[in-house]
Length: 101
Image (cartoon, rainbow, N blue to C red; front, side):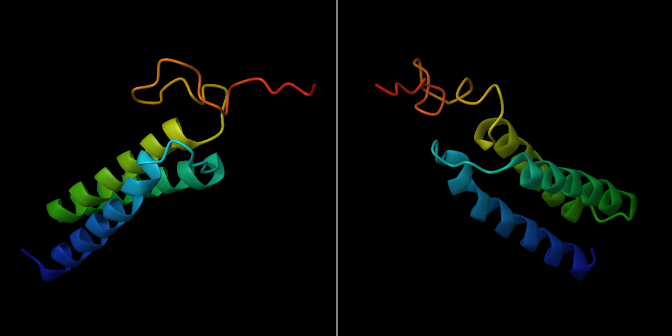
């Protein structure tokens, strides 16, 4: 095992820990212009690390890509916003129509 593999894994784990509050916050609003490139980079890095034999780094980067994908799905403004909120049977405040009266 290369020591670099552990360093890259540590960086990915740190990223995952830092992103968890964003995923859990139902009021978070992260633009697709941030989430989609970040998810893509995670998957590309994970694939690259895997081809280099750095399995731990690959897993960490792929998980980071998955986390960004979940944030894109659940916390980015798009036409399905509010439909995937966990534990919510009613529409979220973001999707409720505003009354100007």
